[in-house]
Length: 334
Image (cartoon, rainbow, N blue to C red; front, side):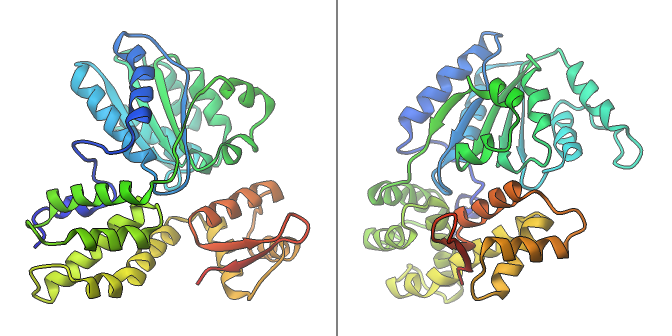
């Protein structure tokens, strides 16, 4: 039944994108300056999880590489590479300059100096989950490098800009902004239809099956593709030639749990500590949460940083926040 498993993976970049024409055209127009050898202001892509921000950014950059002979590109997930060293290492690796860098012995300033010295082909960098950068000062340094074209991806502007000092805030004030809205039901069905056409045998799933998946995904393409993948694998294991409605209904919860586990595994140590505290409590208010968190970690972050961490957990449906600022409580979702 599964003819191309890659198509059913979240990181797969489709050969064509659906229902994001205005976003694609806007980002393409911004990056035309790179093709002409000019620099451009950073571009911020923002919106909820599962709305195609990362997919569109990588799709456009791949298109750009097809049109420009001499171009370097690099994708960095700042949730995984959240320290200054890790981010700089990835950026240097993208231009083949990380071969002699060692985590323990290489001076940190050397990495930034080496990146500053880069003056060859244009370099387009995607910083995904950019609000997760531990040291936001690095953004200021990167924004000053004319050879770098930055595409920044975050869920909300506030989570990126609120922790910034005035100097960096001013630097990013003129950034290009592209907002991504949640997918509608019919748009999700269209996206799923493409994935089924590219990755599954013909007639492996009916139109009503795609409708059923889109309904359960509630506008999140990441969840929709996860359900389709899980349903296809389950039907395959059961020796079925088509994905039945009953199979879809049976795998929805498990598919969502898989995505939840993947997200939990990506949490930083501080975020995981906060998540564990909330998960063990029936409900907890911010002062008590911060006190328990501070007692469990060696170098607790500020309350403002912790609020940003909690907003991240909420965006990815790991926790539930109820009430306003003064009467807020946090609860585990599951």
